[in-house]
Amino acid sequence: MYKVVLVRLRAARKDAGMVTSEYAMGIVAAVAFAVVLYKVVTSGAVSAELQGIVKQALDARM
Image (cartoon, rainbow, N blue to C red):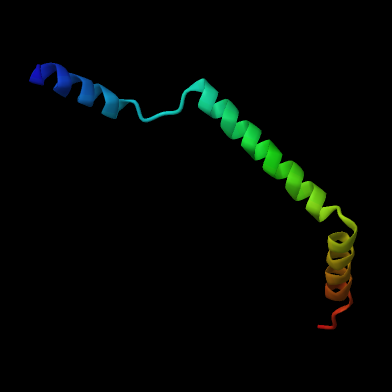
């Protein structure tokens, strides 16, 4: 009995990677985050602020 448990524990330690379904869920989460980030950046208020920052940086004297 002890040997069976020990063999299973050693086999479990070797499996450190993700399976295909975990990769798929990770990709779905990354795409969802990218969509939310895109929507925030392209919204009116944020877009205006970003344009103001870029304009101020380009108008700066050196």
